Length: 319
Image 1: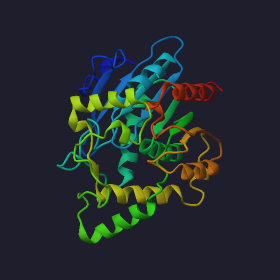
Image 2: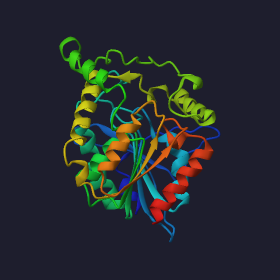
Image 3: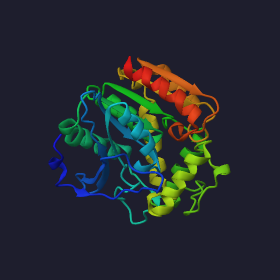
Image 4: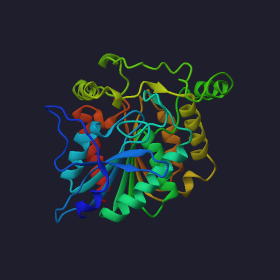
């Protein structure tokens, strides 16, 4: 791929720490969508003779590309090219409302449209195949929808703790429904406890048991506080509910024929691991690996767990 093809895009900033740098040869730029919202895209091209294809790596709710430098480097070392973008409304992509601290989306179909554009206009035209999709949490939910809607674009897929349901779903549904009468879509969801910019201490976090990697992410946010959201809005909650209803429809999951590897954390306190197990049973060609002592973010977990994860991923990708 000739880099001049990307010169028309405005360069986008990215964060680094003294001891945590972006992988070499990063290209970071803004890609405008049909409604004018710009998505921050970062990519790394593998030009070696041993190149294996391309990984589309998509993060979860309230994440950003920089968190995944370590994972991206590991994928590059395995001879893949890597591309990732911040979902609209988070990271360094544009927001849709004035209050940039709020997670806001009217409908996940908007995320689907953004992903489709990146696939058609950026990846298909510039990146080598095969294409493998990796999605974590909310990114896993949206990526699963992409596997359903674009069955011929991906060769394989990996879902890490995909957002397929929550243990407190009844509250989420009730709260978001009641707020139709009392609150605006842009208001914080009642009971969601926005952090208002306050850091969560390591001992109180529900994302990882690895203190070093957790602190690294905190230091990234400190360098650019606006890269982190404070809480979810009523609109976001309603959009999540709608997407969960869609993927639970009869025969929806059964229509997906892609080879899938699903990583499930049985003690996950963010998403419901049982709902992930239920979905896996509906998928035609899937394998699930379960971790008993990890938190929600396996890519940010302790090295001993990540080694097991990578061993399973290598087996899956090379089979």
